[in-house]
Image 1 (cartoon, one colour):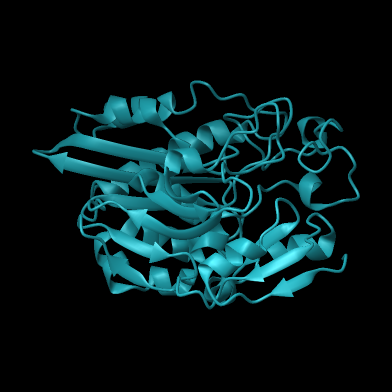
Image 2 (cartoon, rainbow, N blue to C red):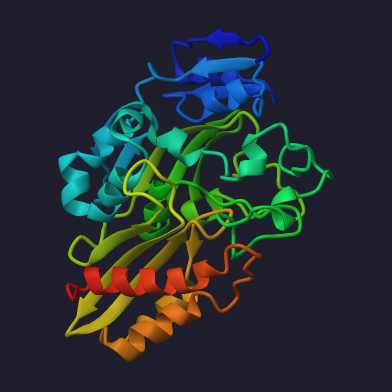
Length: 328
């Protein structure tokens, strides 16, 4: 671990002034960042503590939505009365992530900023990782790739986003409020994380020096018909092999609107838009649900060890839809 400076600013503006173009990290709970720093994956020059900047509140928005501050702990968000009642999909996803101890420390912004999951990325003993060393290659493509991406990957990187919370936020069409030297802006959740493309180094579309202020949830939370399904190797403290956030509006026994987001399959939370389209106007019968689930993997490109995810995705979608629709 290299030497770094620790800054505890008195205001958000002070925090932004302390931020450099590179080598600066904002730190809340540190549950992901400190692990990566100790292993040598991240090498910060400056750590800026954002815990005392007033971003730890959950408050109603004028349009009827909900704003969750960047420093709100995952446990506090999951157990908030408004979140549980109006956005149960988010509460379920938060409670499915990590352990109680980690949820008590981890912040909402930190959860968004988790680095992608890959054995070869987090172990600096492996030299071939385009995310750490651009141009060095991707060891996972020919190595052990059971946990890796089947959708949206590239020759540069096949790592997956590890966040349960982000899958639910993708289905809810949340947005992320950020502030940088050029002022505030709101990023639609679909545009917050990025696919690897030709440059695997970046996991998000944040500009250098930008800080997350809050997550904004829209007024509608699909409280009556939603479910988060997580499939993993063990029942606690394990990342998803596949997860599904399903949010439905059902009218007259038929799906009027559908939101389906997948986790554990891509470099970012993956919206299954074709699956959503196939559900609209149909009852949740066997034929409609199976056809919609199959559409989610139409463009999948499995690797040597993870072709089992093709079937797992379909089964997870079917179960999530049945549960969300009250049929399970």
